[in-house]
Amino acid sequence: MGQLQIKQIVKENNSVAGRKDFISQEARESIKTAGEVVLSILFAAGTLALAVMAPNAIQLLKYLPGIKRKKTYDSETEFVRMVYYLKSRGYIKLQQDGSDFKVKITQKGRKKVIKLNLQNLKIPKSKHWDGKWWLAIADVPVEEKYQADKLRKKLKRLGFYPLQKTVWVFPYDPRDQVDFVSAYYKLDRYLTMLRVDHIDPIDEQDLIKFFKAGKIL
Image 1: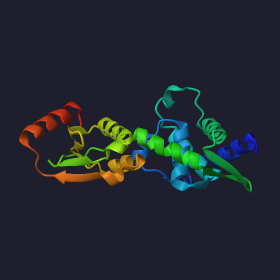
Image 2: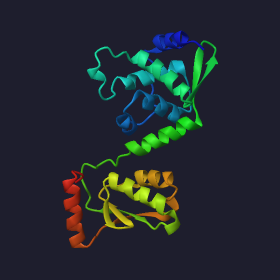
Image 3: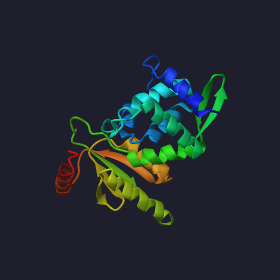
Image 4: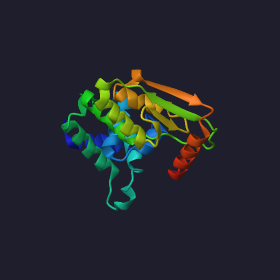
């Protein structure tokens, strides 16, 4: 498996034709490094031919934060370098397939992507708030305290307001993100989501003040 051969495949296939979106716009916006680009595409696709993957990944690499400040940046070279780095760390596998290579994400690579997704997770804001509140209620047993603390810390980082120790509030629909977080910490069976039309006026004043201060409302 020669690096020059891989470089040649990348060079020959780095064209506009045949590009495809393997990851969502929201996911693309959260990507920070070349490694995350490669792993995220493979996480969505499972296995891809290098000739298919290269132009898609290189297109995304050009829009990473800080890339424009690097005058000598070469996205093709960076992609090849990252493929070799991820292979050396055991995150991906390369298998010769005729004149091409199949690139496959490993279980270790999948775990890495899930962790990155957790770190980059954000709750999208709607253009207009409908005046309703979303409550995440976590009734976690005492023996799961360690994981429960991690869940609470993550909800806080996501911008939730702690109405009570086990009740967290957000103005926009956070179900997808809360489902992901609670499943990651294996606490999903203890967590319930509710949407309410009315909250005590005094509490609501505090909520509105909190979310306006955080520029969420």
